Figure 1: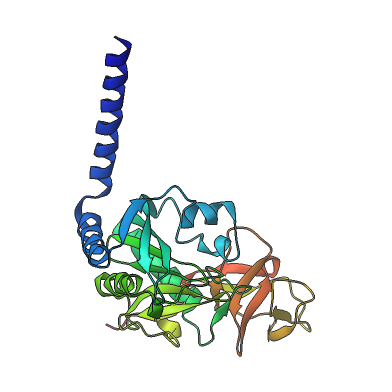
Figure 2 (figure 1 turned 180 degrees about the vertical axis):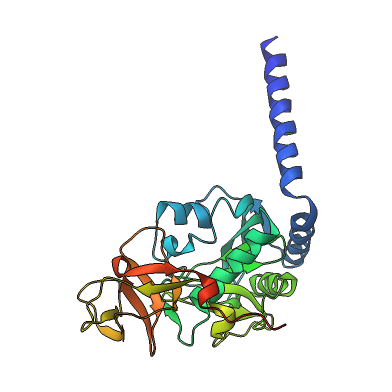
Length: 297
């Protein structure tokens, strides 16, 4: 009887696991994963379920440089996890085998997808590369692509170059090809590069140098509680003694918000000449309707 019970329990676990996999791998995610598996099989590589901390678990735990800046990509109200896998046996030039990480999340709604993409435009659509202090998403290689339905994170170590790992490069190109371009800039991903730099990628795999302010910004603030003869400094880092990059007048309005962390005493804003960090207590949210140009009739 004990053996029979164990057999039933094992069978039940298999059925439950299979049902979960079926739910995870339906629709758009199933098709994408099948294409990835085909590319990996051709190269003698494989995709296996991973138990390592996910991109979003790291973000929620604040683990590692750049993790906390993935908050908007990992918002539970905006997307839900589909699954996470290791890409194993990826052969690099020279013969060694390396590993990558793949994570899929599904948008909870079309509106949530739009909000995440708009946030990516604001944070990473400037003229300068964002570094780890300014809100970059990682210290090493991490690219987060989007389709109409999915967020797809591809992560690999500092020591790996796409050019030297053909199978990983082909998976990367597949994700770029399946991504859904967003806005006039045709952005398809946030790219986190080596040494803590981040930027947007377009559908050709090129770094987007800049997004227009009209497309980039939907949140604005105005300066408050600053004396008529004083200014609000915009600083290089979110620190009171950091280098002063720019200034806002005591009555400045419609200041674009680049990045608004959920916690902390600072906002990253765009000043007249430079982007940087300003004290949150001297800034008040301003309705976008007062600052954004009216739509063309």
